[in-house]
Amino acid sequence: MQRPDVIKKPGANERNDAQRIAVDRAGSGLSEIAQSLLDLYRIENANDPLAVLITILDKMQAEQYRILSRIEAANVLADVEFGRIDLAVTRVSEMQQAAQAVLAELSKLQKDFRLTTDKIRERRNVDILLNHLQPLIYGLFGSLITLLVIIFFLRSKIL
Image (cartoon, rainbow, N blue to C red):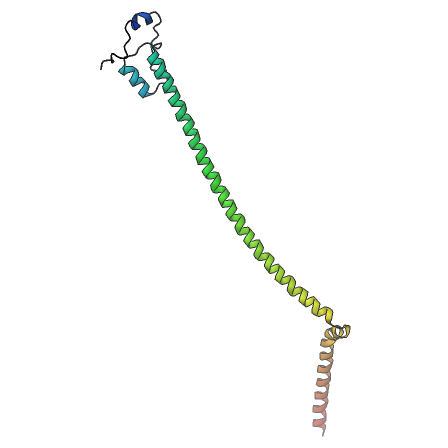
């Protein structure tokens, strides 16, 4: 392919021969597109304005790709962090519901305890004493009845 005439400058090769620096294609780090453009326009001089422009644009594009990849990585990390935050909020919500259920049960237990203590406070001391002496009284009555039964059976055999 021939280089278009619009890009050729008359006398440019004669002026730049003294300043001619070969384009380093192997170690320049240029992309394939930049190298193909240099080949398309048969640019061999690194000081050629078109070569400088292609090099600058190629470096700008590489920098844009690097920045875009960093933005994409940051976006992925942000998605992961937002997922973790969402999971934490869900767990906190579940824990809050469990705590509210425990508090409701505790409130019910306190109410039952209060009713029981109020009933105990309303009792008289005699009622409390009888409540503690009741097993003794039942035991004495049981023993008395047993003694009466034994005496009844012994008297009935003797007669």
